[in-house]
Amino acid sequence: MKYKLQIIKCLVGLIFFQTLSYSQISGKDNSSKIKMNYSVAFQNPESHYLEVILDFENIKTKQTNLILPVWTPGYYLILDTPRYIVDFEAEDSNRKQIKWKKKSKNCWVVENGKSSKIKVKYKVFANKKSVAESYVDAEKAFLMPNTIFMHVEDSIQNPVSLTINPSKNWSKISTGMQSTKENRFTFTAKNVDVFYDSPIYLGNQKIIDFVHEGKTYSLGIATPEGLNEEKFASDLKKIMSATTSIMKKVPYDYYSYIMMEAGGGGLEHWNSQAIFTNGTFDFKSKEEYTDFLNFVTHEYFHLYNVKAIRPVELGPFDYNKENYTSMLWVSEGFTVYYEYIIMIKAGLLDSNSALKYITESIKRYENIEGNKHMTLARSSFDIWLNFFNNETNAKQTTISYYNKGPIIGFLLDLEIRNNTQNKKSLDDVMRFLYNEYYEKKQRGFTEAEFWQTSEQIAGKSLEEIKSYVETVNEIDYQKYLKYAGLQIDLSPINTSAKKENLIERSFEIKELPEASGLQLEIRKSIFKL
Image (spheres, rainbow, N blue to C red):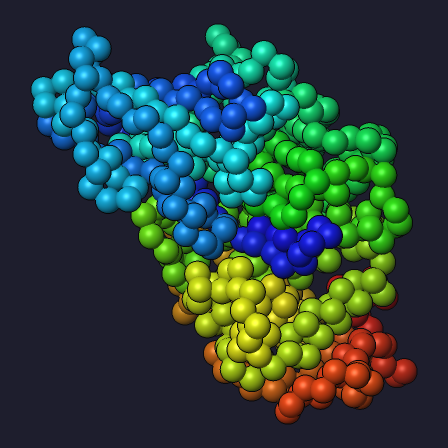
């Protein structure tokens, strides 16, 4: 996930793992599984309420626990969305009311007895303009299924169907889910994880459908004013082709771009992304348009790095509490680095601009006091405490993996290229993690496996780079940048702000006046310089 537009330049990577359905793992028939058929309606959308009906069949227990997640993967904050549930009720197949109680803040216990079929109804107040929460008004609706629809406990692998009854004023639907042949307003997901990972936008957005390299795409834009449709679609295709040239595989058949009205932030999903825009496509400058394309690229590359390639702690998810990992600097930080690499490959970002972006990451990390107190690994583990940390001492005590993470990705790329005579790179690490852990082992990687993979491809120990993750040791930028015939300006910069024990520096990256053949080759391979 990434926060970048106007207000915030901070990002976010979360992270839905597309787990195999039970039938794929066991080979058993789905007919004995609990069936979950949902519907949602919008009788008075201007009130920000929506109406939910959950139909469950094949229940074998006398009590049924219904769970509503308390957080959205990729958005590391406990949202406590169960507080927005109103007028909960349950009935059996004879429409007789069933008693229920709360077991915890996000668990409803239905006393269904011998009834194998139950119907649950409730309303949801949806008035949060966020990529991780739901919002409804008279003009549109953005639905994050995990904030609205409960699932039967221990039935994550079960398939789900959803029928949408949109407001009469809405004519378009954008989502990564595919509709059924019988009803364009009925959608299916092979399991609850996939369902929760499929945001839905309803309204009157502009829809552009296209095919690229054998895959089908839908581009939904809520505020298309100023849009150059041909150019923008062409640039998206360049980004996707450049990404495929790195990863070699495309793990979907259909992908949905959901581009909403003005706001801040974006969130990646398995075969879609939902992002806010500036509220217009009439960009004021080339730089502003490039920033937006970087943003879109970031969320798209998350399809690989965090969805498929993920820390082992991040899937299958526990939707009831925080899910901790010390590896978000790979999931998010490397994705920042790759947005620049992909944009360069796509011909949409020049090398000097890419170096400036990297310089800005270095400055945001180095020119704050927090780099003396928080390690990169801890910035990941403690994100649940610091996701929106606006305390006055935040910059003095914390760092962001969105800043230091891409630095480590860059240094690791340089180290691998230098030690292998530019025959290997960070791309090889990412491809190996994808092939070995996502495709073959169908799980995430451990921290030890990440370093083992990186060292195997680099052909050497990476203890120094590892120390930059686990400690607050000063980074030897000159050593690594020299591998690509680059240097960094460490001279102090003039600033009126007095900061104790902190000297702000330029950190501008420039070409070395003289470079060897290998250095030039590495530099050209990354930056086309």
